[in-house]
Image (tube, rainbow, N blue to C red):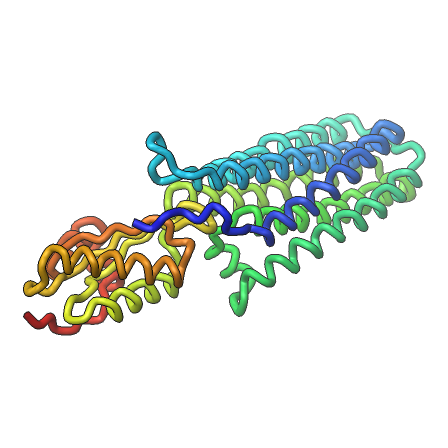
Length: 336
């Protein structure tokens, strides 16, 4: 079984999270001061949003650090899913705190509208916040573009195994939209004598956060439950195994993504009947070595002796015929 690689980096997502953390701290403090000074509901919603985002980045950094812990006897598969757990918690916090507080505050101000005092303060703060958030958004977008390759943005989001990377981009995008909504509400309330606009903009900010948190929670939950690895990697694993096994054959492989850089794989293998036990052991060791050299993220690899029909029946019972066919390697005869 291949060993974990504790030094494998996650620099792209870590850079994006740190950039977002710095930006959110600056923005949150500035927004909170402006909300206290002007009494703006939309600005208060934005301040809460930024404080929630700041806490979220801290949780993501904690999850990234804990996920790199080495496996032990109590956790033989490692701690990789810690990152997916904390990513799911972050999505819930965006919904419960960010969206909840914004909508509650907005409804309160719609029922009891109040004028915004010193609106110019809000406008200056929102402009500064847009610059801070815009810088963080550009950093996260640059990192996401590097990771997505030729995929479209939504397809890359759905297929991504690295929650911090897409979470920061979504949070920053929601923050920029929220700032634009808050600015519109402030201008309408202060300069066009429409105090209801302040409360309505707060509700709209909450709606943006509801949509964002729903998408993030869906993808984080899927990763937490256990998604398969990328299809190209699965094909590569099978190709490497079949190239190394001579007259034996890999029937197929099942994978589970444990973390962005940690994958557990279980391979079904039909060994040539003429092979002795020592020869099979040597072949397995060689396959493990080749796969780990090509894909260090495959931290655990298990190989089970099985004929093709047994493998097909096992997978069909678990997942259905279509999946059984999709996970099988190309068929070539085994010679004895």
